[in-house]
Amino acid sequence: MKRAIHLILILSSFINCKKELNVQPKYSDFETHLEARNLFGTVKEFSQFRAKIKTSNKSQTEKPIINLKENFTKNGFVKSVSYYDTFGKTQQITKSFYDANDNLQKRITKGENFPQNMVELIERDSIKKTEFRNITINDTLNFKFYSTFGKFDRIEEQIKIKNRDTTFVKYNYKFDLNNNLIQSEEIEKDNKTVNEYKYDENGNIVESINGTEYFKIKTIITYKEKRITKSEYYNITADLKQPLESVTIFDNYYNPINKKTYQNSELNREIKNEYEFDNNGNWIKKTVYMKEHFAGSKKFIPIYIESRKIKYWE
Image (cartoon, rainbow, N blue to C red; front, side):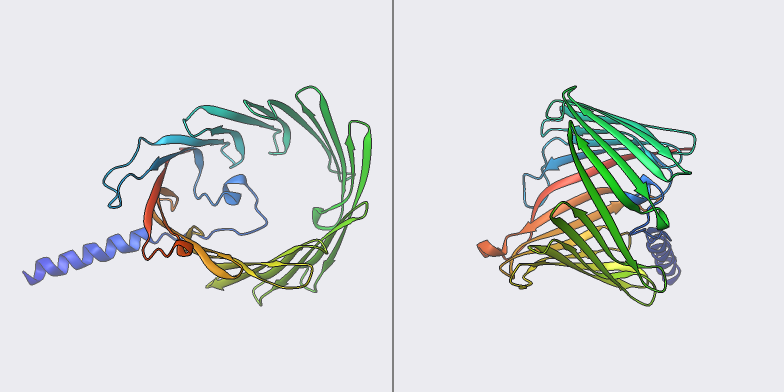
């Protein structure tokens, strides 16, 4: 009997260890679209479905309906994205085309809603550090973007042409002694957007303030062992008040497991997510619960289940 219990404990320990995979999310400076989407491993394709929950004990759900599908190249870049409406009908498909160095050359979007047809062409000159983008929407609207890049391949100047209307945009940057970006400015006519950043001793962004002189958003990020565990968001109004907007708690894989939203700094609504993962650390099932504090709710109510079917490159 003791031997059987000991074996069960060993197996339980093995299973628990297997669930905690050694994967580290990236939070910035993404090299691939998979990293930007917080996907691990050589994902080839995933389809995402949503099913509403009918009963509080989750025993009955509606039929899962697809709402998103994405395909990726072997190097982790998006080949196509398909969006669907609440009935599972295709609403929009975007296809992307790359050169041998994984530089985006062309993007085509077709959909039921605006824009019904959009074609984006991209040309780059690595020597002159310039980029030209030409976007045509429904064969009537045309946008051209001429961009020049500088230090750390950050955009410095841009010329925007909408049909025959031309706008000049200037970008300024400030860095600390460790080459961390601490301030960026985007100046377009009389409008200026400023982004400010603060870092910890490991070079992680722990605070950012983004916006104009009239309205800004402040984000405070908490880390534990180089992983983001919490993000707090505040609105900064023209009178410099900073009401709390929301607080999000993350698991080790950077999936949100709890989000509290506030109204006038008072707790309004709370969302809780429970996940199931595959062997690569990507979630394949997410159960979403809601608690409406404004209505005096005392417990979480299951709302819907999202599931993902993921295929990997061999």
